[in-house]
Length: 427
Image (cartoon, rainbow, N blue to C red; front, side, top):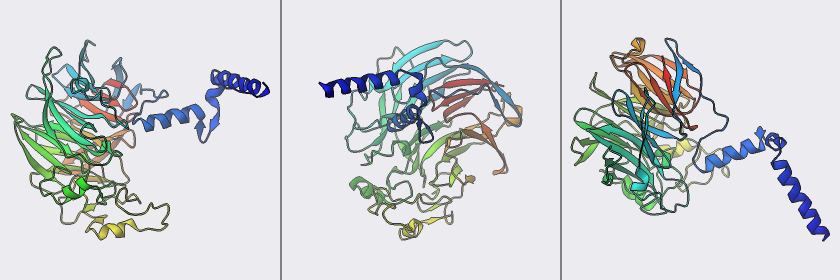
């Protein structure tokens, strides 16, 4: 009886304190206990929403201030596609729910759930690895890419689909590409899967999944087979013909291309990709060129060799991983003998979406500039190019992690935040 009485008191105590405002301010490490657990659970679930996040009222650059104009009423982590001069297509990365939003009138049309259409939401995954990598509109079709473990619960692949834009369409999305399934559940964000298009072709990036984050070859069966496969799609940019009936490898040597943009003004394909520790790049992509990864990089090895048969570095102090990389013919701190980047950063900025400001944009001082997302720094870099060289790099604070962005001709800037908000800023 005494034990039950004490237990009841303890239960009542914890229920009481957890419902009290004091519970939310219990010190823990460098924050409070509840904030710490919220962040940890978000990390485990591959989510980045934050109850503390607040959109900036104004984004300021050296040339313009852009004020918060409106925001999308639903929360989520979104990928964006421009449909026309007023409407954008919005796709939630983890649920698959889509919308069409007129950013000027505010009208929202609830569209189909693309992941449900593919029956992917019914799959029972060991981890939350299912995620949309990108969405794009071209040739009167919607294109989207998905990372999932639906092929086999022990591996991940990248799939790409085309779909009708109409919410009333009953046709299923059509598979246009699927990568081999790599036995690695820890790196769904390294599959690339970004789209852009010229007037005649669709481009898509495929991340380098045969090697780990530092560049060590993975030991899994499929990874070993793909490393010796000259036609492997990993670490490539692919080009599809306009009918999307076939594709070929356009360029190689890409680690994780998270930004693609085709400039009709200059007939140039721009790409932004993550390096390891540093070495994030912006490239002008030319067909047939090799951009170096994993053989060269201005970045450095992380200090571990995940899945590569080497001991955990915490158990072997002083291991020189760059020396081990040299035994595979890989050199860090160099880009010798490979296509050089247009620009590279150290330390890492987490290079993400890339966008060229249109030549007719109302943001006259930004015309033909490149905007490159910095996921690691909550910034967007504005690059001025002259004679194919970067002569100016401005860091613009945007207040959060930008997952995707669009820029309208009148200068309205649409930013999708990992923290769960989709905001429209007006100059």
